[in-house]
Length: 299
Image 1 (cartoon, helix red, strand yellow):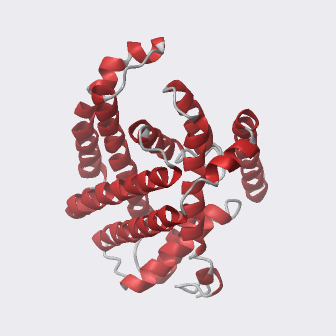
Image 2: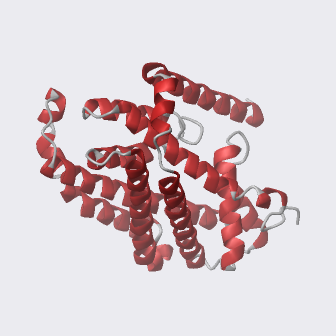
Image 3: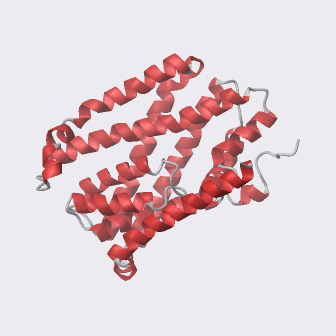
């Protein structure tokens, strides 16, 4: 099959999945009801969350710089920040074309005498580092919520309650597993393991705080812990290449997660929509660099 046709079919399938999941959630909630919940949101909390998310993206760009330097690829910080924003824009708004990471790999391989395999490895480890921290924090939040607050009535949830309460033991195990993976398969980047892992935990924590600020703006004080747990789970699932930029996957995770934990589904999905809106606005900062890129691709 023609490569372009195959890519087009994959993109079309992702669009269908995103549309179907959004229709499922919105048809059950009612768009009018969701809109009423969204109108309760505080503009100040939205702006504060935007600043926090933007700060987390800055830390994420610094983490990638560490990985690139470990393969002897050094880029001025401002230039790399422009490239990073451009990649974010491509990831969210041009899903049918070249992805942000693929674009960065292509551009960097054209401008620096570093093997493409090592550039791809650096980009892959950068993503995996973030996912590792997110997974570890999800286990931590699970232990805090189910250990201190939750008294579930759902029979399935009650049956796994002991595991949920002691999920914190998996937090260091996830990090150790990532370290072992690093050491065995990508030992040439091991020198940046500690700073990149630290950055991953800090930036993921900042995003959780941003979600909490949005919840405060929505007036959801009592159910913050379980909603933040659902937030981290939805962030993990949105990484799966099943929809356009995780759209639909996040919302359906929030909807059914809230029902499972006996929470307000409208509030949960509203948090998902607001956080996506912030990510979209941050990604739009990369639009100018589509027209005036950090690196020219014609060399």
